[in-house]
Amino acid sequence: DAGVIQSPRHEVTEMGQEVTLRCKPISGHDYLFWYRQTMMRGLELLIYFNNNVPIDDSGMPEDRFSAKMPNASFSTLKIQPSEPRDSAVYFCASKTGRTYEQYFGPGTRLTVT
Amino acid sequence: DQQVKQNSPSLSVQEGRISILNCDYTNSMFDYFLWYKKYPAEGPTFLISISSIKDKNEDGRFTVFLNKSAKHLSLHIVPSQPGDSAVYFCAASRWGNKLVFGAGTILRVKS
Image (cartoon, rainbow over all chains, first blue to last red; front, top):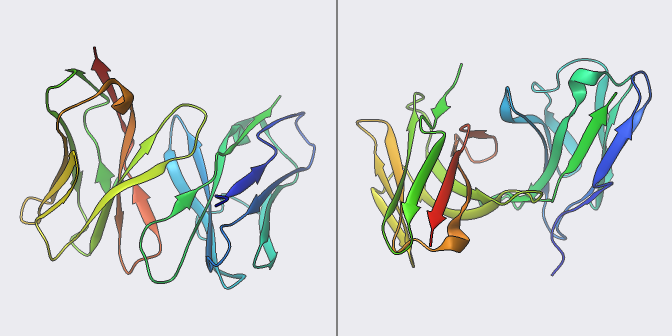
């Protein structure tokens, strides 16, 4: 069975550019989560969706960040404009409503120069 | 505010011995706790969990203990194997959706 799929795995971009990270959750999972991992802040939740609807975006750092889930099998996290302090590993995770356990993708390592 | 704390950044254990990883939390409203394991360049993978109504859950070599009065949980790995070398994250949940993660503990199992 395919797990959570994220693309790209690595992204290097220059400050000011737009960055789009992509995620395909596990089929049948109705919750999707976006996390960011940094040395300073650890693993922190940015936003999560239920049935494609954003439920809690209180972790989104600022207006430069936006996330969408146009359908049950696809989500994007966009940063515009990107800044060097956005450099981090971004994880997507999904789960069903019946469980607590979340299943993570391999992550996207973003470097903003 | 750090609601979930893993105060030991790293732990080194001999193969075959017991590994004990600790986690403390401050929010008494957490009702479910999970442990994740993470290898380099991979996402965290779910390992074991425990509900706040229990004090122990066991799965093979892995056992999680919960002490609610102390707001403390621990993960025991017996016997430890070199393949267990990874970063271990403790996570806590309230109402089932949002997870709050600790900073992680690097476990090294020496052969």
